[in-house]
Every structure is written in structure tokens, then in C-alpha cells.
Image (cartoon, rainbow, N blue to C red; front, side, top):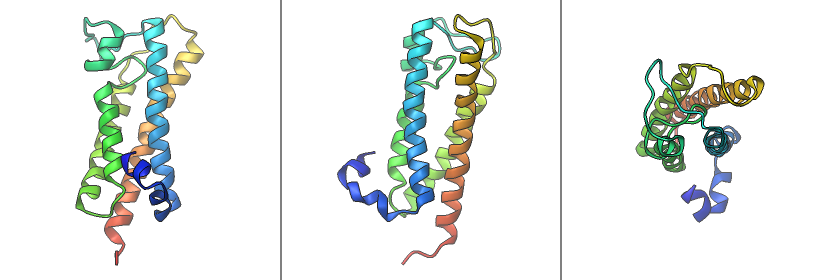
Length: 157
């Protein structure tokens, strides 16, 4: 995001697919923050298998394992930094794309293993938000892998 703010025209130097990848990453971070607000408001704690932390939901998001509907803050900050590092066509950008694939898959797997329990919000709303939090990271991982393959196989001047 820093590169985008610093050089607003910089994003237009990339392919439309890469722009969609960046915009989808920002959408995921924004959506994660919104689902965090829902989780904090309704006190929906994260639970992985049978393990659950003893922290309140907001503290769990800030420095714990996240909420039932969103990854922890450190994962979102890491994703923002990694996407920002992909703006250039160098080795760091390629490494960042690989790490984005790994982080996105971890977020998706963590969301899959989040048990669907009796929640204080309507089941349709919870399941919809939960499904988006599973699918968006998978799409981001696929797009990051595609950008990585495109940059690896193409010859840059």
C-alpha cells in the first residue's frame, strides 16, 4: 500500500490480473476487519479443534489466534506488507508472493477448522461470513501463485 500511495500511477504499470490481485488483497483485509467488528460485537471467540484461548475476543484478535471470523491482526499486517513488496519485479517480490500463498492457505485452513457452533448471530449470516473467509484467501493464494509463475516465466527487460 505504501508503494501505491507513494506512486499512485505505479499500479497501472502492471497487468490487469495483478491489479485484481492487489485489490482483492485489500478487500480481504478490509473484510477481515469488518468481520472482526462483528466477532467482537457478538463475542464470538476463535476455536481451533477443541482449543480456545482465555483472552477476550478483541485481545485475541490483536495478539492472539484471531476471532471466529477473522485471522489475527499480525496476519493482516503481514499480508499488507507482503503485497506492498510485490510491486517491483525482483527477487524480494517473488519471495513475497510465495509467502502470500502460504499465509493465505494458512488463513483458509484455519477458517475451515473453525467449528460451526451455536452462534449468537443468525446461522445464515455466520455461515455466509465464514464461507467468504474461507474462499477469499484461497483465491488470493491462487492469484499470488499465478502472478509468481507469470513473473518467473516471463523475460523482463
